[in-house]
Length: 263
Ligand SMILES: Nc1ncnc2c1ncn2[C@@H]1O[C@H](COP(=O)(O)OP(=O)(O)OP(=O)(O)O)[C@@H](O)[C@H]1O
Image (cartoon, rainbow, N blue to C red):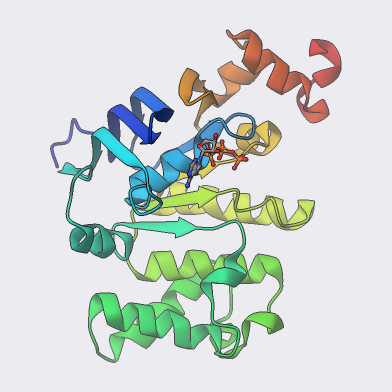
């Protein structure tokens, strides 16, 4: 990758189902060590954008055109095999509910080790990688021996992040990763993502309808409406001085961000 190119560069992206275009992005970029928030009301196209980056929108039946470059590599039109490989190495999905990512009848470590062996080959290092990744998400590696139901929602989410780290992800695509968690656990996951950004140059595309969460975590926020980005700016600026009425309305709905003054 040339140094001038951001880790993720989206240009002229269009995601459609039949005649209906649901996402139309002229340009959106994400640098190494940056957390970009995707905000907007339900149906704005946030998740679909994340799915398109992961190469999963086509599998969901969408037509995807334009360009999505990850570390200099074009993803739109890339073979499914290549996309599957990238999903297990360069990028990882952090889902809303990590429970779905783990087999309920297996210790979470078994799922993690299987994924590591599948993507990174066999070897004694798989266990070491898994244990080291657990420490990076502030969990004792002994948690690998537990079953999903023996872990709290926040712990399970951290194991999901650990799996992405162990696989070597440079980009985490987090789709509402905290909305199923209570507020203190939410804050803990955000703190962890911020630490991974600061210490490891991790990049995160953080999809959320919760502007308060995004404002506290993200370097930049892109506000989506009807499939388009209507403003994308540094988080602090966007919250303090929104340019678009729609952004102002979204902020007004969040009391913690001064809804009382905007309402
Ligand atoms: N598989 C699909 N088939 C047809 N339309 C779809 C499909 N997936 C998403 N859409 C449509 O694309 C639009 C964008 O959906 P998307 O899930 O990206 O919204 P969102 O901003 O993430 O909303 P939410 O916060 O509710 O998840 C919606 O109108 C949705 O109905």
